[in-house]
Amino acid sequence: MASTGSEPGSDADELDELECQVTEMAVKIQEYRATVPEQLKNTLPSIIETQRPVLADGSEPGTSGDPNSGQITSDKDALGDQTFQKINLLRDKISRNVAALPIVLKRLKECMSNIDKLDSQNTFIHPAFKRKRTS
Image 1 (cartoon, rainbow, N blue to C red):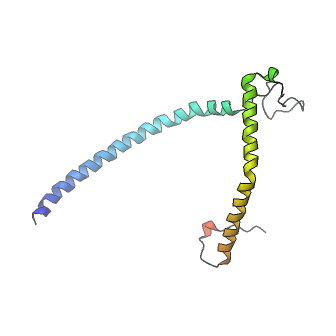
Image 2: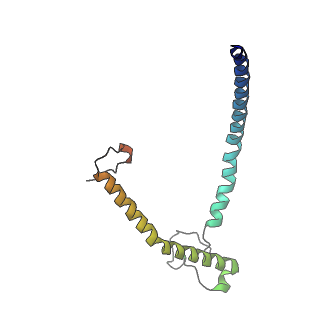
Image 3: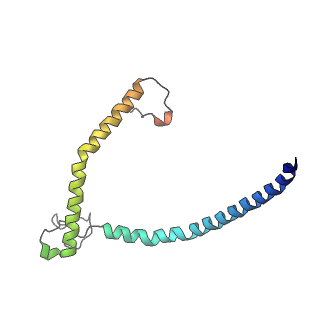
């Protein structure tokens, strides 16, 4: 019974410690809410700008005009070394993605067949996971 006398004091200490942790978390959350959106505003445009392709004539992608105005020339001297390396890197990435397509397609078909098997078993499936039938 002596342990019950010390429990209210330890509960109060534990409660004080938890309240202190909650206030610290609240301060951190306020700091993140104040700084993170500004950091995103500053970094996101620069990231997008670096990933945008550079066209040979300096026009923006998607603009209308001469049909050949948006084509990237393959002449290394006209583009410069850095741009030429970026184009080669992009070509390599595209070829790797194309090479991976059969594997992804196979996995997609397997997943679809598994879903069809589950659907045919007449088990309860939550409505959020059912496919919408369009007619």
